[in-house]
Image 1: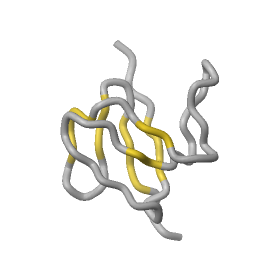
Image 2: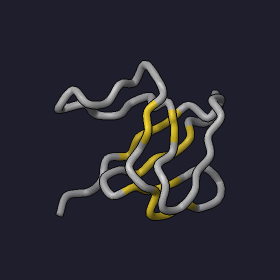
Image 3: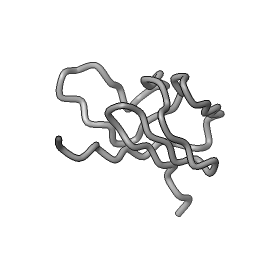
Length: 70
């Protein structure tokens, strides 16, 4: 099995992350090999399988982290 892609999302948009449910996030650098994901608007992820309570979470295929302010 290959490693899951690590995707940053914009934490300035309201995000509610609950185990077992998809999360609405605005990805910044999500790969888009099949043309299914936009980095220009909010998307619904597949159900969350792990959540650290601090903004980092994992779905079946992807690891998500909030972009840190620079």
